[in-house]
Image 1: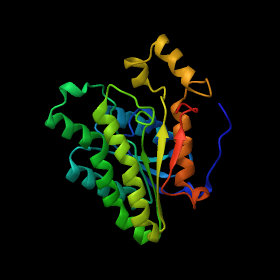
Image 2: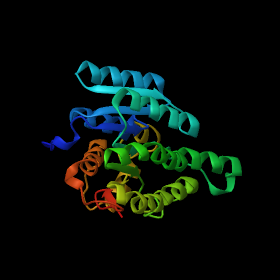
Image 3: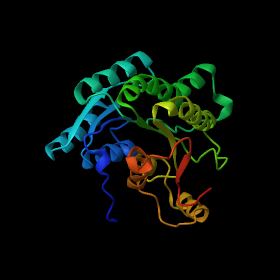
Image 4: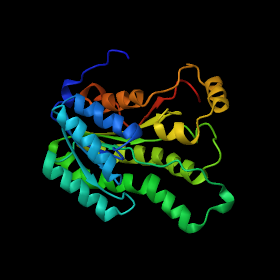
Length: 254
């Protein structure tokens, strides 16, 4: 594993991560905790959340979590408020939570469409709405929204997911403009195919990996840690002049 950077500006920062119990989100929680941030995360995997929080707090980190179904906007904003009581108002928000469940366009109903948008997009907007007043009062902040290169690659088999992820980019740029006067930066991180346990269990096969390697300029498979490192940079003062943009972590696969 490479020797990674330390960002002094993240020490003591109040950070909120959605979908932090597993996968890329858990790697982000670990990465911020290692920087000395006060980390709060949201997830509806209560057991996984408790396990991660206990692991990190045993090591001396300041990590708390809240159970939350992010499709319930009232509950989401209430959970963010509870995290603020524990850690102080967030000056870093990572809108990470999403699910790339496969589906054919033929079977999509209006109810399914609405549920997928609620799962992959809607909560991001209202999480930003919830943290913005605290960031404005603090004189600035950083928001990182997780996109996906699936729609850049014209990927098929999950059209509502890719629709939601494409919309994330427009949301990022609009909020960057509206919040910029308050010194709040808003960016999108765009992962490629990241080798989380979920991906390995559901979709990784030798044939799929071989095909994907052919698309990447770099042939190594992408560990979640590399997404977390990009998020750390964008949250830190090192990225003070970075906003309204996309930051790719996909080994050159577009």
